Length: 100
Image: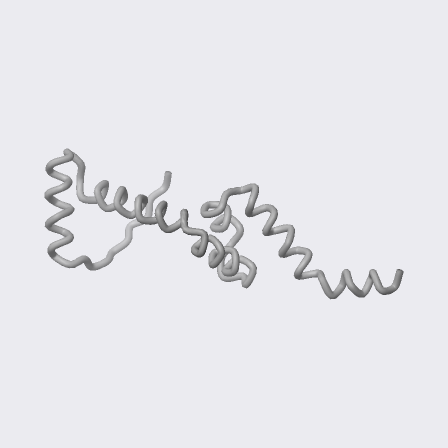
């Protein structure tokens, strides 16, 4: 897995708590923060309202297909992608159907 360096500020008490957790678990601060963020994101991604909002973001072109896959899974994402194609070509399709 590739990594990317990010810089952000944390309240001092969180840094202290992360450092203590790192020492107790024999991990480093980065590992503690990665694990905490992964757990938080997993909980968030399990919420139906969050998933629905992510789908809306995809349909409105705010996020890419790969991001959608990472949150809702490939099979569901492919169904949403197919629906988006139909929605995007809905007027064209309706016109063709009226010509029949």
